[in-house]
Length: 137
Image (cartoon, rainbow, N blue to C red; front, side, top):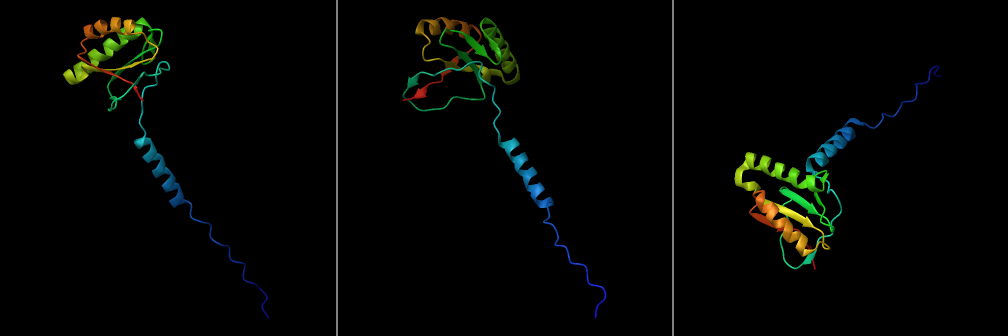
């Protein structure tokens, strides 16, 4: 006869350390794989066109609303063109002629006359090439 019973054995808990390591590795992966982009100053509906190609997301982008309002970063209105010019000068100081190309995101309802008035101002800022962002048909 046994007077003392062996205490029941507890099952070992699942090891959590490997799961925590996997979670942190996934977190680091998604932080490194994410693309950070500047938020648009206002919503723009691009015009439709046929063709192929993609806009350079890393370059300088100027937004033009349907009413002709300019936007760059968090600046809107006439101050946006000055901020855009300052950013262009800063980019040229860092990389030279690589900042002579700009991306224009104009609204489809923007009149051609307003866009034509904007072109000499952009040329005066030193831009020699312009990419207009459009939607495919």
